[in-house]
Figure 1 (tube, rainbow, N blue to C red):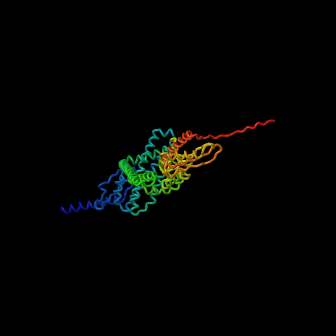
Figure 2: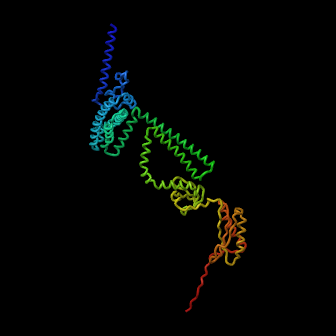
Figure 3: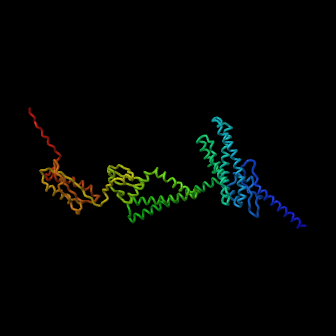
Length: 454
């Protein structure tokens, strides 16, 4: 007797399970509001196959992406095709309702926009927009799942893309479009997973960027110490390498941060590469300045703290960037010269050599003793403490002008002693010539006037 009762109960359970399976295979279409709740019903689960059946109530915008992926995972290709068909039907019904509402909003006059009816329609428009964004996102999840299992989803994907591309055609102004974009972000951020993902991704992104920014500074500092110890290359080249290493480390960290938050870095770099010609054309002057600066750093026609002449401009090199060189003139003016202009012109470097020659010219009258004046010049030059013994001081007659004999004296000094020696000898010669009775004539011109008599 007990065995018969148990058999009846067992047969009843098998019948119930069979009915549930048939119900799951029918995948009923939702006739009412397409927005449902995310519920994985216990009665819809088959413990033998772990197969979850999505009921009409489960096909809606309230289901989270994680729950949807979990429910889709056990489904076969055929089951996913049936499931996609039902979701596409739900999307179509929503788009119809949304389009009708959008048309009503578009037909409102400016006065009707702020009426009770207008406000109600715009609120409904925003609500429909929320549902569209979420539903399209879920359908794309189903498309990916079906495609991975061998399904052909090209037609459905084209339809979804077309719906997304044409959803803003009734926007009257830029303000409406901005509002729509803000609504899309608000939909995502207000979702159960959106705000949490946003915070997590923001923390992850900025953490990686900050870490690599600090790492870049550390690597730049280490590079500076190593290059300073070995004293290789110009100061500008060492600074350039230091900044480049720091920038490269930071840029790598930035790309990793983008990848960590889901940005397709490879696609972004491909797009930048495709637009390289346009970018290069727009930035051709900057690129020219960059490469000219790099050539200056490598070939080193001048370095930081050198006193140079470029394109008729004299100054001390204060710094050099990727695009320009900064000079400070004797009267403390700051000049910024593009690197391509500096590299493309003749560069005179007054401080490149350790030793320089001081060229001095002095005028004596034709009545003065040339040999005496020459001996005095040589004596004063050789007696100066900053004049080098080698090479020897050169002196002689430079020229015979209309009013004076021009003598030259050319002592050699260290580069940093050039101006002190120049100033000292000029002053000393004037005083010594005056003491020895040698005159320094001024240019003179005789005018002879003839009296004409009738």
